[in-house]
Length: 286
Image 1 (cartoon, helix red, strand yellow):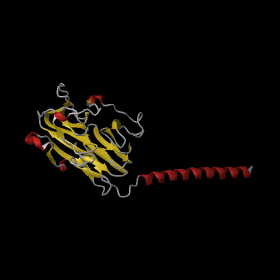
Image 2 (cartoon, rainbow, N blue to C red):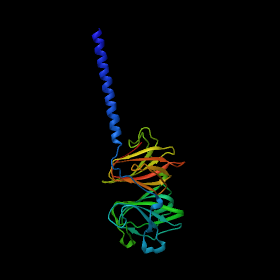
Image 3 (cartoon, helix red, strand yellow):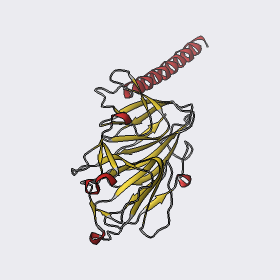
Image 4 (cartoon, rainbow, N blue to C red):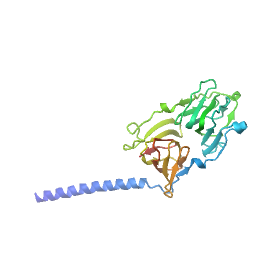
């Protein structure tokens, strides 16, 4: 009876020891997984973006463009901010490549030359297919959109070069964005109140919105070799892992990375924050 009791204690001790070892291993693995050697995190404040004429041929009537990543005049994927003055309206025109865009400030209309105005507000998303004739208009004191392309250069041509490559334009008003919480997407941690909306995907990349509630303090983990993020609404605090410096990112500001990264952020606004993200990997909001 005494031997049985001793054996029982020994077995129980081994089980407890094994369980503790497993927990310690998991804790160690989790700690190691969050140590990023030589982090590539980068921040660009909206005040640091330099603007130039988007279409120099139009002179003073041209919108302004400020490149955030890539090269608008090169062949690589590029993201830039486009600024339009109040009352701007372009003549019918086409582009040599397809682009995607998100309204950041003001009201912007982008459609067929004969279409009635549909003013898209901040957080709205649209695409403009290569070769399709369209106009772009704006109204408001300040009108800004994020524009991105998969490859350049980004050129403007007259409608006599119009063509149909089979794509169709998409205009999604902010009120029609579909948001997924942690019960509908495993890209959101089970304890997080953040939400996500998947906008587009191709063979190499994908684009999405992330919405952070006003009390959010957490991280976004990314595992791709490309992560480009632009603040569409609100203001957040971003801590650079290289020196632990905290930057305040307002609308139009950028953060990104060129390797696996952890982005430590908190909502610095009284309202929700909306971030646009382009990546070739996956993210997890925690």
